[in-house]
Length: 475
Ligand code: SAH
Ligand code: SF4
Ligand code: F3S
Image 1: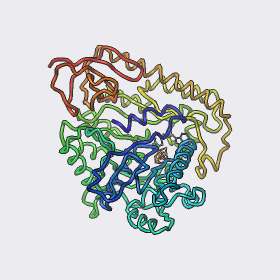
Image 2: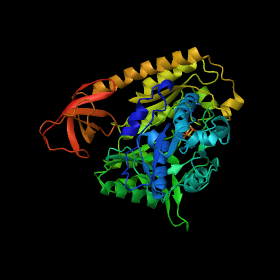
Image 3: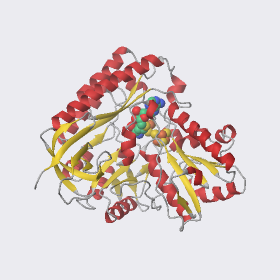
Image 4: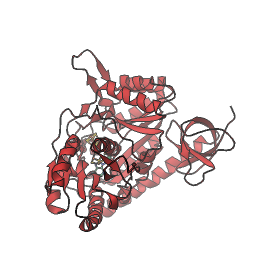
């Protein structure tokens, strides 16, 4: 999956925020052109697809070249300071083009829009629009006003907006894998995190609209959907008359029943909320992928408490045990933060040892970046010097590299069902796909009549730290 691939390149702060260019729309169908770039998490990429859909109905077609665009949008992320810096740099580049082409509108969407609100218009004089994540329906009217020379801002957060009725336009898609947003916002208050402030209260999307979107994707040839939310396990939807209640485990089951040929993934799970029900549902359906992203953040109970994660080291380890007990073949990945406030060498060692215990197949690793307005910023001092944060992060990355390699070595000699996502970028004679456990597999096409979207049985005979290499087995 293209977008997860972008994310999976994010090993440290310096690589955060890679851009993503949309497909090219037919110039005869649309009178104006828009260009959009997305930063941050999958929710933002998914939101850009909603924005694209809203813009289509307003006569804007996508372009891959921002210099050609009438409207340039940056869907931004505030999670770490570095992410915001990247966007500011990008805005400077857009400004140069705008000087030559004054009619071009520049808009900032997403989490930075929410965090900085009108400040962006004051600081970045050439920004015309600032629109927060819950205000995309107002884009058409805001654009119209902005075309008349007004600076427009809408950063209202909503308690019920889920964009349930908007059918996303799939941007830069491989035609096989797609995201489906199932909820928005977050009610947790992890002390380091800006998301509850930028995305507002948690709300779950109408279950029927989610199933309908999954069916539609399947009918159009898609073979994998990733259900998205900041905390998917707390998905909980009740219809207007209170006749029907759907939990995350129930939703997973309903999506799994769309077709046995449709793979289901989900992200992100919070260790405190993932239930046995969810684990049993995963085990019951072959097409629910055996992969859980279970951010640990730290291995020290003291730090976890300061982070307000509401679980301890022991609780987390018991959750890992439970996952492996119910699904021995399930892979687990994590998010890890190095150098949170007051972190000692002993706390850091606890993080390294929980990684060993959990045997993560993959991790997203960061060093702590203090965010204005968060609980941690208000309560604690960001007291770990940057060189220590970076050294600890490097140690975490080194452990993870070894764990990933060890996990891949264990797969040699085994065979896996691989969903073919497309040709390998390096060699058109090879296919690229993924196992249920979310590992990338490269294998020669040989003379088999497979196409993207098909499932192939592949035996693994080699690996690198990030990829499995194998051969199709004759069935
Ligand atoms: N909702 C998800 C992830 C949200 S943000 C969850 O709860 O797990 C993705 C990751 O960014 C987090 O899991 C965390 O590891 C990291 N992160 C968030 N705030 C951060 C900060 N202030 N500094 C460094 N990393 C941070
Ligand atoms: Fe942030 Fe915590 Fe919510 Fe994840 S669960 S988005 S880390 S507050
Ligand atoms: Fe970034 Fe917002 Fe996602 S802060 S990580 S884009 S929810």
